Length: 473
Ligand code: ADP
Picture 1 (cartoon, rainbow, N blue to C red):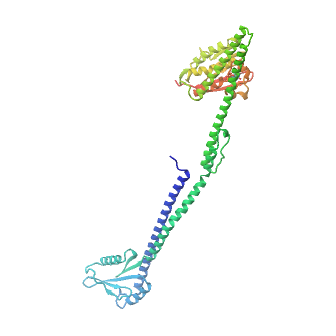
Picture 2 (cartoon, rainbow, N blue to C red):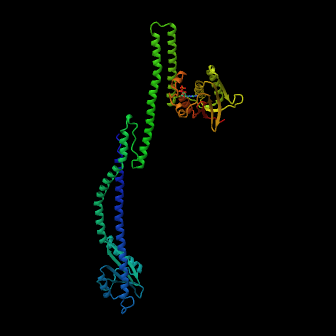
Picture 3 (cartoon, rainbow, N blue to C red):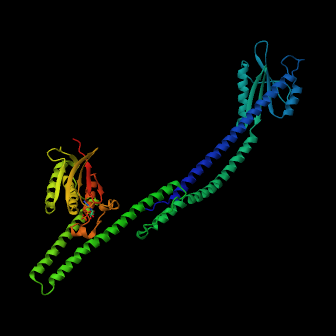
């Protein structure tokens, strides 16, 4: 299934929002126009009623009575106003019956016929209003106001604003699709312009192959999110590049390390096969071959251990164990290793005085780490002694292996943990080192959530300390 492009999705969404907003806006404009028209009409009706009311007073026919309007004069005036005005005058006869008279433009005052005889003034008003409203329907606005004995009914046509409204609706209906089309095009262009930095990052990322791991994506991109993406990719490239370089260096180192013993093996074999060789010489050749094969086998095993450790394929337990008893075992092996040298080996505090030091991790892997540290101490120390010292620091327990060897220069302190790094290549080889001992020790410590630190002074000795999480009792 092909996924839609981001530009298409964004354009579609923007267009949908634009359509909805435009339609809502148009509806609002039409509704506001209608409301304004209706408001203006009602205002005009009220105004007319107000004018008529004052006219009623001004044209009072005082000769005929206090509530009597001179019809002809009022009529003339109302006709000149041009509106549809109906005025009624209700009088109550001597027998209490209301009688309603017309006072309207173009007509003499006349009694209204057909009204219920017993109807109250209010009922007559409702009756008249209903009759006018029914006739005028929604195309006219009707307004009624009572003044003394008079009732004023004003009717005005809605035609002017209905025409305006119709024109507005027609214009909206015609212009809305056009506006939506223009807005849609605008949205497409805006989205395309917005996505340019993202497209550039995609293209730059795709252009980076194994040979261009040193290339980085241009940042900042002009958009915070895209810059964050570019920076994220750049950081990932840093890591991939570092790993790739390390792998290349490791492959080169490993090939070199393996080639050296193989060359030696071949040389010994050729020498042993040469003519006129005494049996003792052949034996020597085989002994040398055996030593090189042993050393190579050890190196391959160590490399496999590192590979499995780095791929998290090493089985490690995580249980409570006594670090002191592991140190005691390692001390005994160290004594055996140092038997040919005049080196003293001690544990501090002495086993008798020491309390168990409970650590959390794998006792066998811990022994392996301490053996690697102790082997180096014995290997590089000519005279003096080796001390295993138990330590404690907050939630960690540690053992430092201190020697009185040559010490390590500050610039080499970090490097000694790198694979195949040796300060003195030939001496290390001579002494049986593979250059992997400390790399393995650090890896095994880290796999147990521990670490190894080193302190060293040139000419005085070194102290490598293994720290492991302390086990809570
Ligand atoms: P190797 O097999 O060569 O001993 P390691 O990884 O164990 O490899 O150590 C790396 C290098 O660190 C050694 O070659 C040596 O130069 C230096 N080194 C390690 N331990 C000591 C020590 N206790 N005293 C002096 N140098 C040391």
